[in-house]
Image (tube, rainbow, N blue to C red):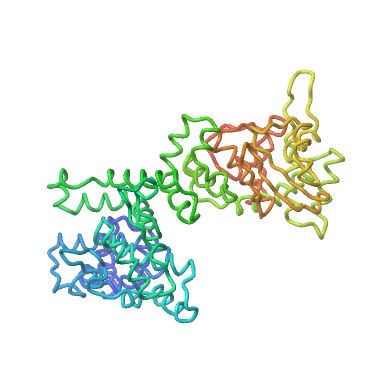
Length: 496
């Protein structure tokens, strides 16, 4: 009988929180921690919530749960004195005149209430400085705590938070955390606040904008009554995108802020890029030219093609052995078979194996005939797929001989021979990326081609299309040879 009552209590709590927009893992954490009944939801306090959602992966669930719980309590008539904490967020209470979360509690006391905060304090006591990771965690605690109660984080609070950080951590600098906007500034970049606090605010609101919008519209009667007096969340988000876009037009560092603003502005920038040629795009967004610009390309490709989160490395790793076994069975070309033998040498390095594997692919997915009289050889296809040279001085001449121009992405590999590779590069227009491995070079080559809508070289097109189809699942039509090869690989994998 007791078990049945407990099951009913579990259903009661889950039936409430299941409508709040938490992830399945977030709901699972509540169940795991024994939050079963409506009474639990009435009594739970801020400290307990922090213990339940005590990992970085649950930050979004923690924010959503706190906002939804507060709204649920209001709509169910749960007064402050009847809740477990007296007030839902005792550390985050703001006065009527100042919405700072530090009004009723010191920064140190707030940090001491979470494992991450305690870690920051301990690290500083030991090292006398904050690492970049400590700084980011510190700003996360402050900004997400503030945004739980106040959508706006203006100059007054931004400057107070920065000041309190420097007071508690003397080695830090105010300008690292907050530099206020200056409407009279002649430089556009100063018309928006800068620093880690401002960047974190923009990023956090952008991440949770749609969720916050739904929560407030569903549960806040004041919003329904006074919609004309309050800016809509759509307008808020548009302002954030515009601020991020403006910042990027004036700044190329610090790189952490570039990445943050790049993600927020991605959809808007990509839409605008559709009306520009490649030269105009690269002039408008000079960050592409940075040594790390390929990270920005990866962000844009994911947004442009609505890719789900996927790990190229894992996909490519799944591909290696099944593809190699098929090529060993099917390829008859003597020169290519010698390349296959090198792949299987005991001392073969991973970069060399990947390099040789994609070259051998051209002997299976045969090059497309260019004309009735011209049949592309396997060797030509392989030279077109990867420009292989012993030094950078030879690259332009090799590209010329193969027939590759600067307006086409080119994968360049340098080395003494195919078993001793030293450098992996992508060369496209004014973009020059040095990459850490052959695998990463393959990934970036496909992403550059996708983002700027550049067709693969026709001599090796089927090989590249196969790699794209396998590692970047897209709703596109592919040659039957590619489809058949993917099916064979999947058959091999399923039988393992």
